[in-house]
Structure formats: structure tokens, C-alpha cells
View 1 (cartoon, helix red, strand yellow):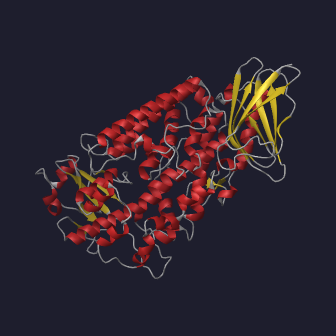
View 2 (cartoon, one colour; view 1 turned 60 degrees about the horizontal axis):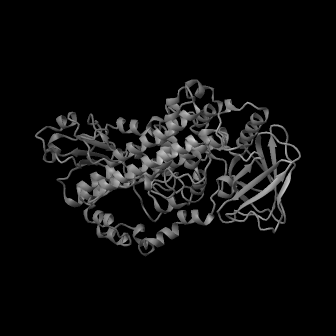
View 3 (cartoon, one colour; view 1 turned 135 degrees about the vertical axis):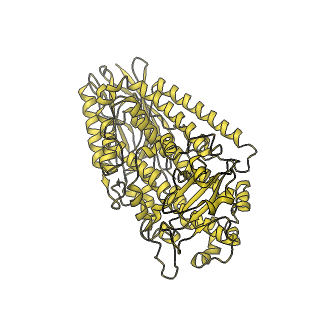
Length: 617
């Protein structure tokens, strides 16, 4: 009598175990096993972190095992169960692993394929094709698109975290609430003691130092000592939290009438301003997107203001980037003067503060929220709707969009909603932040997510001209490492360009992103189809880089790049590619660590050992 040994692994999360009835059925190419009860209530199987084994005896050989069906039936009250994986030992002694990494809720069943990744055209049997079709049909009913605000990328159709599918909810509400808990963050910085300062004008620059009294480390202390200096102001545009605003100035805009006479004392090469522009020594940051954005008026007792500044920078003989002219509005005139380093110290410092204020709003709302969180949610929803769990792209991308939809749902409920944190603590609250996203969407393109091309488009690619642009240097290294890993994986499953074209799921995935997630916006440039392996590699690299490295550079976070605790891939070639990827990331981390030694302003944001896998924070 043939015997199959079943090994079942329960998750390590809190409340992952269950006391409900668990049934299992093996579906083979020849026949199915009987529905077998694996555990009875109170038998202490399927506890948190447990690995339990069972024998199933059958009268005849089942053939090749195609599917494993798991059912959970209520004992007393519904008790959700998280299954990591199931391993089947065949009568021949061979082992087949069935990755799960899913929650079983209510009385529903979960049907698993073995861990080998397969393209849709690789499925040949009726059972496999039918399972794949039903899986995606159910997912498309579960993961639905919804417009949260006109002009935004589409989001998940769920108003609250608890309305989300259980598989994409946070494992612990407590953990995410700590991340989003405004009161706790305020308490940690002692800002409660200074809340009155936010309700009135500040009297002295030393007020800044009082607020940041709790931040004590070498870098922060150095910044506090030098924050008013021009070199620090310029350095932040290269390696601060929003290093994507500055670009090479190829022509002075008419709306910013800076003359040579104004800035000649700042220039070091005995060249005119126009000649410095032609030589590639002038850079610019233009916050035109802030023009017309309404300021926060939620508190009638507190007047708040916004600026739409333009800032001109000069690369001096030491290759430092220094500000040389600032205009706080987009329309020149007597009421909108150009501030210069030769002005009074307070006027110049205040002009730079206004620029930093605008940079803060663009960073939080556009660079961080839109260009990492919201677009990663678009990729995530499309992935769940269009890619089967056995698709190699699903297995590859899943760790990088893990919990992204959950954190964004929380944000829509607590942070960027009406009366949320943005309304309470930001100058763009009360609707300005919504307007910022809507404006940014009009110029948001797919190519702007391709890191090397985005750097090149801003004229910031020359390491010789800008030797201290570490965001660029480290970002290119990480991009290349991710792209190399993705290429290895793609080459395992796609033999030629025609294989990409014939993959109906990957084509549906990219079309869903463009046509629904980005609402088919004009000029967005998101592809609706992929024709070559190179295009597929680039697309998958964009998804991973945006959710991991780019988010780390503009936010900083937790679960690190290259670490895949949930083993969705079981094939040896992919595991070897993962190991190669990890080694490359380790080499990059060592390079960055060595480069930073002795620096007063080390740059670690894109060190792989500090890059989270996803935008879950």
C-alpha cells in the first residue's frame, strides 16, 4: 500500500497557529487521495512555529502530485492559520515542496502547486490550467482597483486595514501602529514641550536646536553645527533625503533673471555666468510644482505660507555645490526679489530655509509618497490580479511589495486623510498635499523610475564633475546588482523574446499597471506590453529598485534587500542566482563602508545592508 508522508510548517507570527480542523487532499495525475483529517481540536498540532508530520496511506499510487488541497473547518470560533509550506514525501522517497505562505481563514480551502515556477504556456495538463485560471479569477474579484482621489494612481478597494485580504494585512497591528503613531513620535522627540512654537512665529534660530535636543549622534551634531552654511545646504541637494531635485542648468530660465553682476563674487574661474553655464558648472532646483498649491488653513488661528522657489547652484573649484541665487516665487518682480549670499546673513539664511521648506513638501508628498509608496501599490495590486503564484515574476516580486498595500491603506486612514497627520503638521495639509500629487502625476513617467536614465536626464551623470554625488554612485551600483540578479532569473525561464511575448500573464500585468493603475494617463510612458527579454528585465528591475533602494534613499527603513525568508522559489538555479545577488550586495556594502570611513558626513542610505526589501515603513 503506497504511503505519503506530509510535513506541514506553521508560521512564526503571533496567532499563526490554530485549533480548528485541518483537512488535506492530494491531487495526482492518476487519482486523488481521500480527504484526510490531519489535526483535531486541542491536539496541540499546528501551533505557532510548529512543523508537524503525518502519513497518508492510499490503495493505489496517485501518480505525479499536481495539487495539494488544504481545508480549515471551524471548531468553536474561526481561528485563522498561517501555513508556511507543505512537503510531500513520495513512496519513491522523493520530496516535493509546496510553498504556501498564506493565511487560511474562515472555512475556505487553499489549493497549492509545487514550488517550481512555471510560465502559463508551460502548463500542459487540464488540472494545472484550470487551477491557474480559477486562482486569477478569484484574485481579480478580491483585489479590486479604486480611485481614492481624482488624479491619483489607483489604489486598493478597501477603506480600512481590516478590510484588506488577510494575506496582505500586517502580521501585527501593534507593529504598524507604532510606525504610524503620531503621539509616540512626538513624545520620542519631546516635541510636546514645544508644540506652542508651531502655533506662532519663531523668534530665534536657536529654537531649532531646542527641538532636536533628543537627536544625538556624530552626524546630527555635525549638521547642527553647520546647517546654516552654504556647503551644507548644497550637500543636502546631492545626498540628503530628496536628492532628485537638482539638475544641470543648460540655460538660465527667463522667469529667474539672474545676472553675472549679481553672482560674480561667487564665481571662481574668471568666467562669466553664461560661460559657467556652458561649461557645465551651474545647477538648478526649480520648485515650480509648488506654485498655486494652497497652504494649510485648517487652523484659522495659525497662518501658514508656501513658496515655489528657484535656486541656482555653482560647482566651485573644489567640486562643492554652493547656492548663489534664490528666488522664492515663479514670477520675477519687485515683490519677488532674488536673494544672494551677499545679502545680510539673516536674509540669506531665511531664503535658504524657504527653499528647504518647499523641498520638504515635495519630498514627503511627491518623492516619497507618490514615487515609492503609491506606485509600488499599483505594481502590487496588478501583481495579485494578473500573476499566478507559480509565475516566476510573482515569486520574484512578492517580497518587494510585501505589506505595501497595507501601509498605504493605513496612511490613507491616518496620515493623508482629512484631519490626519498631514493636516495637523504640514504646511500643505488641508488639501495642498492632494493637489501636489495631482500636479506631479501630470509629469510622472515610467522612464523617471529607471535610475540610470533619470540621473542622465538631469545631467547629473558625470562622476568627474560631481565626485561627491554618493546617491548617484551607490544607486547605480545597487541598480546594476538588482538588474544582474533579475537577468539571471529571467534567463532561467525565458529562452527568447518570443517567450516574453507569449506570456499572457506578464502582458496582462504590465497592461493592468498602465491602463488601470496609472489610468492610462497621457505621456506617462508606462508600457502596455513587453516584447523583449531586455524590456522585461528593465521592468522587473524598476519594480524592485523603486520599492527597495529608492525608498530607502528617501525614507530609510527595516527588512533588508537580498533577504528572502519566505522561499517561494525552490529551484536550484534560482537559489544560486540569489546567492550571487547577496554576494554582490555584500561587496557594495563593504565598498560604501570603506568609502565612508573618516568622513564627517558619511552616506549610508543606499548601502544594501540598510535597504529594506519593500516600502512597508
